[in-house]
Length: 239
Image (cartoon, rainbow, N blue to C red):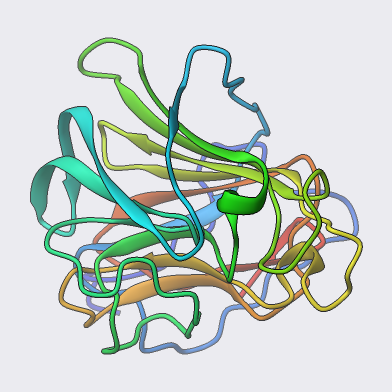
């Protein structure tokens, strides 16, 4: 009522589909420096020009971005990539944690984007690749988990997803293959998807231990002063 806050589901965007619904409920998430998330067009970035990162089970690696990436009120020139489906910013405690939790949470890690935080194992199959593309001020840093199996899963039967970190601060999650043939893990059933600030005080949870993700889908989160949390069910945005 004071015009100081709100939640934007979409604006001038062809994001709505037949037979869909959006429900908005009061939430304590979001806040200053938060993100608003909506469905986005799926456009998978191939990995032919990307650099393979050596990651085993429950491992992480610090990688330069190639430009200053805005996140949570600061700029970062490097990120920490975890084998378990998340990308961290700043000093990281337990960046390779395989135990996913709800967002936000005071437990480590904090300050991350998570396209698929779960117990994954690129050491037994698949690969994790990074690439910086574009020119200023529209550069993007792309991290791809390609055919990466869950821990204990079979090589050659993995998950393929990527996160795109835009120079503008936007974050896009893309999902090429969300199934390993196990209902306990397929479609994000045991994963956390979302964004958490570096101070762990706020975040946007797209989904948590929910079979909400589908092949050929994408979710884009853009910085907003209002935040809010949006989840997906069968590719349709709901709160």
